[in-house]
Amino acid sequence: MKDITINTNSTIRNAMKVLDKTSEKCLIVVDKNKKLLGTLTDGDLRRSILAGIKVSEDISDCYEPKPTFLVQNKFTIEESKNLLKDKKLDLIPIVDSNQIVKDYVTWFSVGESNPENNLKLNRPVVIMAGGKGTRMAPFTKVLPKPLIPIDEKTIIEHIIECFTKIGCNQFHITVNYKSSILKAYFEDLQPDYKVQFIDEKIPLGTAGSLHLLNGKFSEPFFVTNCDIIVKANYVSIYDFHKKGGYDVTLVASAKEYVIPYGTCDLNDEGYLSHINEKPKYNFLINTGLYILNPDILDLIPENKFYHITHLIEEAKNKGKKIGVFPIDDEAWIDVGQWAEYKKVVKEL
Image 1 (cartoon, rainbow, N blue to C red):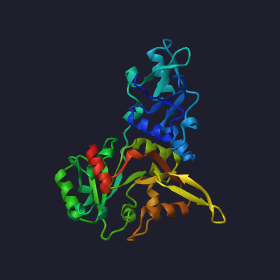
Image 2: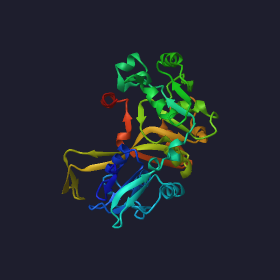
Image 3: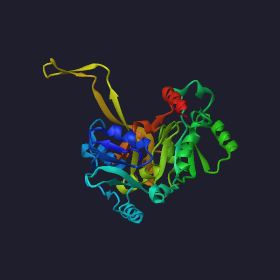
Image 4: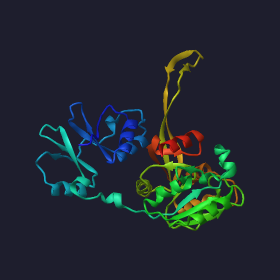
């Protein structure tokens, strides 16, 4: 049995990393004697983070304390298969008569594949690729940022591959800086997906060119920066957007920052109150991956420099619903920074 158990004193951050590394979508929560306490899914973790629980806190208030389980030698394969189907579970723990976890049942172990893993989502994808990529100079003095290579593919091909895996084949690429080079590359590539270029005559920021797509879509669509790679379940993100009734969903990375010094807190009189030794701060960082409803494009002004932050603020002011989908910090790579670029090159 692959060990996918976790203790209640594990942090949310650690649980996210364990889930990220395992092929299963669920962890089994146990005590020190391996007695079953509950199950923990990525959805449980996401709901906890959105409820305000810090990723540095433990999972004791996050997991399902009354899980479905099977008793060793007291069930059939057919019974376990029906439980997985009826309760829409990814995994069911198997325990002995003392509630000690001995194994678990998955779709694979019953000879079937999880229906959710076979879901395809052919939705439009907009890639914002018009910027100069100044953080990646001097490479971007020669090439547009989306064509900088990672291993044997360009950045933009790695991004597109994340979407083609779930069935997306309609890509709209906004271009301005060195656009002719980018267009020529795709003309030579001759991909089996559809590519349409949207020309910015002048730089329009991180969202201004989306106005040029107003009226093109009849369903929610993805928007991504051209210098980020997000390793997440895109079908789950879309499902989160639809079920939550959001107008905009942004994908956010759960980051923890440690100040390597003691910070001083002062009282009202300006005297030292206390010193925090190497304090930790947790943030949800905007990754640059979004889902937008088509009518959101009505808010973007024509031919105006306009950032995605302006759009989200305007949407909030109009009473639109903004969703946040948290992911593990290691699931997001900002390839537009040299340090991160070198890191991902080594990993691939």
